Image (cartoon, rainbow, N blue to C red):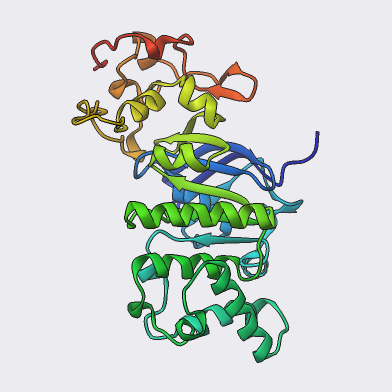
Length: 336
């Protein structure tokens, strides 16, 4: 078997001078070149911290990152210092953040901010830098790109600012793109355009994408594989077809049940099934399965022991002791 482009094994991240707050615990996954892995989970589940750890964006003095392996295209990320990460960001990997207005400098033009990335990583003349900026703005479908190079962020719409963030991430042609909920603040029409654009660029450049989201509709549209996170840990992994057709963890089943369904000619949708309770505090995680006290399918044993990983089907694994098919059965009262 060929080595995956990105391989992560047993990644844990703790914050605080003494590492007292472990917010990511034992995360493992692989990502092939040209594929999209969707990290799914509600806010606070550890998705963004996992991604920013790969990018080396946490301060070393207050963050403790451990892993058995964290390799990107043969590069050991665990051995990288800040200078090495600075070389890799932009060239090997890049990130699109959720809020482009807070990520772009309001005092600098779009052209200046895009040109800076090329200046830092490539030895090009000013004319060649401007040509690269113009090219990438055209690729992300910015209208009238020559004029937009002299615009400031506040002069652009939300959708156009997000396109600029995608352009900034892609301008040095990285092989890994991390998209942290890039469509959350956009209306559905612009969201569809952004997703189409990411897919087109991925097919053209063979980029591997980690897409962070809580929107399962987006996952169904763009994902190849899905990793579901809860309370800092992965609880289920599989292909997008496995996760949607054969959910095998109570949390995954809860997320799917909480998704709105609309059908042609339908005048009213069914009431959404909410997941009761809230995420546990990382400093006080419950004994046994972290999700047991919110799970509609929990058995008494779920409260006592942490479930082992088991294979549901080739490539589809879950950390749940409930039998396959249990999540298609009528729900019982949530364990308390």
